[in-house]
Length: 164
Image (cartoon, helix red, strand yellow):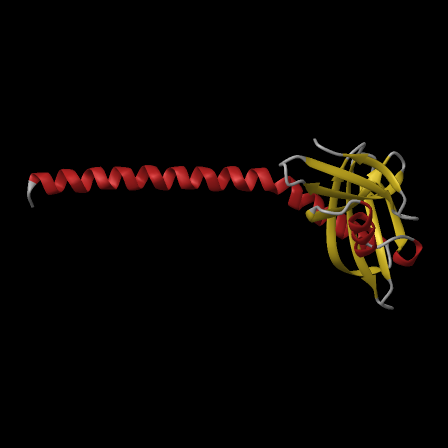
């Protein structure tokens, strides 16, 4: 083989090796960054499935306002819908029948009626100042963000923050 070809292959091999090492490092960083979140979801699901009538988890939520809370929506064997909120720092948990509060869909409808003109609002269930709340977050057309907290039980607005 020509010495220029050998040198070119050597440089190509080094570049490919460096790119592979960078890719591997990025994968490790991503795994480490997302592991705590997936662990808390698993922990919340496990507690709910073991300690409550919930047998099937249909959706998970996370909210960090006044305290960190992990929540889920689930169904019992009898087909009843429940919401479960777990506070990992205090190890406290709360179970609510869906018919004793507002659903995610109802809250999003309330939000769209009271605050029209926002595209793609996101809804999370969690805990805020000693009560279960729905949080609706949104991005405005001007690039600013906002959020609204609604009382889970009656759907009344608790906090409204705009243009953040």
